[in-house]
Image 1: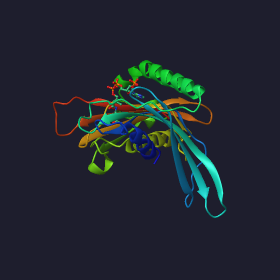
Image 2: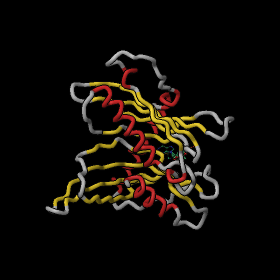
Image 3: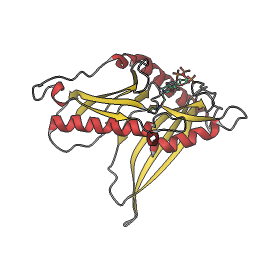
Length: 252
Ligand code: COA
């Protein structure tokens, strides 16, 4: 839902100029904290606003509130910052320009520019993760990284895809969380919840018909928390000439 509301709010202004039509695609989710659980029978309220625009990208802030309709209380359960890039509907390899947003105060623009520069720098610095691989290990020893490492394989079908016929970001995030949960449960042998997720970069589009492999492994443990690294890899079933490529990488 977070991803959907972000895509809607960032696609609107990008189509306001008289030119090629586009759909905004999710390129990055900033570090996300899960502040409170949302319980069965509560109502979710998702709100979003554009907080910064660069030449070709849009920063969106999304807030999620849970409402208990029986007693009328509301809680902020999640805050997420997402970056979208508008892609032409005629040619998805064309990144279009974003009309500049009008800021109510100069400081908002300056703060946004600072965040934009920081995320660009972070992307350069973490490129090395793309070449990493999670290899299966036979008969691993308990409590080792190999013992709990886990993978999910998913065939990307039509219901997983966006208007461009590329895999929906929300589906990737859900599968990522599922793998991380399996790794953590295998290691800790108890119930766990996701407390936060590091920034996720969506490096490449994953097409309908691709086989997607989501692999997770333990990266760090403290007394009461575990950090899991998840890598998302895709390859085409139909076209064997296409190489494998990385879809995304995340620490959770
Ligand atoms: N986070 C935030 N912004 C990003 C980004 C990322 N991970 N990757 C690229 N951008 C921004 C750039 O900063 C640039 O904006 P600027 O010129 O205002 O600085 C803009 O995107 C275009 O960058 P460019 O280098 O020309 O394009 P690219 O070849 O890197 O392509 C994407 C960018 C987003 C189109 C490409 O990485 C992609 O297709 N990713 C997959 C998107 C997707 O399928 N999402 C769902 C996955 S399940």
